[in-house]
Length: 109
Length: 165
Image: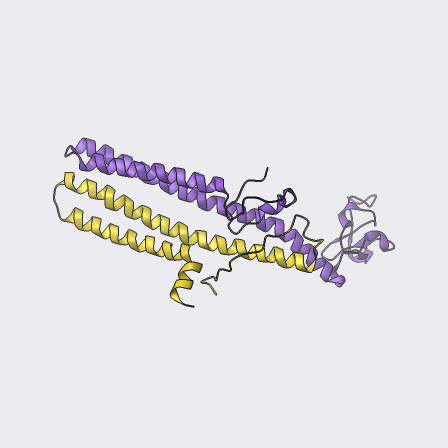
């Protein structure tokens, strides 16, 4: 699988990793800014712009990664529904299953 | 009322409304809107806090700005947590819906384990895993794989057997 296909299939995981890395970089920049001055009035803006934003970026990355896991599980359940309907249509009492358009490959395989 | 979900095409026939519960993602449009709203509030709060903190050298004002920034971050993180929670709930509901169907399918495909009506068995009945014997009409054996009971080895059912309690 080439890189572009991988990124398309796993865009949320890729963006999640990028957000975590970016968050770490922002935190480091904030550390450099805070440690570069001894005046609290100059340090506090770094705490907000780099410290809190860095933490938020890491949280966004983690959320995206967990969302990708949930999405995989959701698609797996959808496949189970499709298979159930194929095997025993009368068992699936709810309705027809919308076919999955794109198949995502899990990183866990 | 079926909530609109992400990853669904707009126009769908009325008979497939129930099918709208199956999507390519577990979140609804309402979940996405809530995430965007809370995240936008949090980010705006962070920007305002940074502008206030960087625009003054007064420590008191800056402390307020830092406190506001922390609150704004908490709001944004709450939005993310709500997003994950909505996904977990949708998955749980989907799983709960699938399990009975899977069990039914397994039961249909396994004739040896398919439930035998208790009325089809003469005399006292029991089912695998039970420690009591029952009358064939007892509610406790309804829908279970009934089989003739080895009465001396089992206890009488306190519901259907007179004098057993």
